Structure formats: structure tokens, C-alpha cells
Image (cartoon, rainbow, N blue to C red):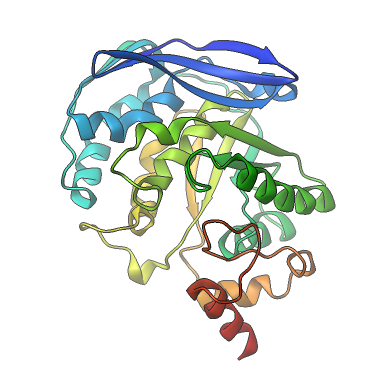
Length: 306
């Protein structure tokens, strides 16, 4: 696999961040789109596409050649430790070598603090701790991200847009910018579903933006008592161990929320007025709202009722 330097194209106020790649000897593009108002956040480092395509490369057993620069810390962690961890939870993966053209150590850490926001219990709980509450300087959320990297289904742009509008309503209410990030990343993950790979997919986005984002909080799914390293269906079981390995010298990637049980998280969210007309916990793959019938809806309703 080859990953080449960033090409930026603009169309109708949207930036298209295109990374020409070669995979299985076929040429293709990995792309992300974002509003052109956020151009100053975009880095020239290839850390984002490297993290995005690490699992696809390991699935194929292809070494990764990077025709550009990556962060030294990320290169060190992804070359060995991170891959061994990924093989523990996805045994079909193969260890690969990473050959960057250049390894850099950036020194300027940006002041932006971001998190993904889907209107779920996990993301509202994270906002409770890092936006509504008092935190040390540099730990309060300044930007929200809403990504289309596989969670909305392939080619389901309408669902992506419908869900984004719900998150944007909350962002507008609390006065935070929300970046809508679209991508074709999911096309490279045949055979490896979103739930098994979401951490690397989503963390590739702030790595693209580390020129303006210096800290990224990723909402946990499980509390510490459930964390384990073994073959699983959900990569979130290893997030507190995996996510620090995706950090660079200028971007801290932090798992947040494993200190709480599901009940404790739900009770925290129940005290946030902003969640009352926007909380969305549904697992219906075609829904932009709550069905009140799926297991996540029922679980949340039961906790609140008790």
C-alpha cells in the first residue's frame, strides 16, 4: 500500500482533502470533506490516512509506504505496539512494516479541544465533564466533530445529513462549532465492520486537523471493569489502551468516560436540560431518532424510569 501527499480541492465552500493511494496495485483516493472555513486546522502530515488505512493494510498483509511526512511518536507506536494490540482483538490481521519518506517531530501544540458528538449518552456525558463542568485550561471542549466514516451505512447520505442536523441543533444552542466531516473511508473496510474498527476510523479525523486541534476526547462505551484484550466484536473494549497509541507530539487522543457505569452516565445526562429534546440512543440503522423499541432505547428508558 502507498499513501501519497495531500491534494486539496475546493467546491461549493467545501474542501476535499484527497490522498492518492495505491492498494493491491490499484490506484484510488481516500478523501475527506469539510467546510472551507476550517482550512487553518488542516495539517500536511499523513498521520490521518495512516491511521485510517492501518487495518485495511493489515487485513491484506501489505506493507505501507508513505510518500510524505508522519509524526515520530505515531510512527513508533503504530510500527509495533498498536499492531500487536489490534491482532489480539482481530486475529485475522497480519503485522506489516511502515516505511515513511520522512518522520517529523512537531513542536507547536494547538489550543483546540475536540470531541465527536452524536447526541448519545456517551457523548452527552463527555460534554457534561468537559464543557458544562469546570475543567483545567486546555481541557474544555472547543469544537465538535460529526463524522461519516461508516456509522451511517455506506452511501446513506440522507441519514448522515438527518443525524447531523440533530447534533448541529445542540451545537448551535450551546455555542460550539461543529465540523461535518464526510469521507469515503468505509469503502476500504470490506469484511471489517464499523463496530470492530470505529476507534481508528474516527480518530483519523482529528489527526487531519491537528494543526488546530491539540486534544481529542473519545467517548468511551464501557466502564473499566469491562476492559479486556481478546477477540471481540467491538474495539471499544480496548479504547483506554489503544487510544493513547494514536496520539502524536501535538495531539493528545484521550479515552473519556470509562470511570462511569452505564447507569451513572445516564443519570448525569438526565440532569442536562440540553439533552431533553435531542438525546438519541437508537441503534436502528435507518433512524435519525429514537424508535423506543431497540435494546438501547429500552435500556435507557428503563434506567430513567427507575
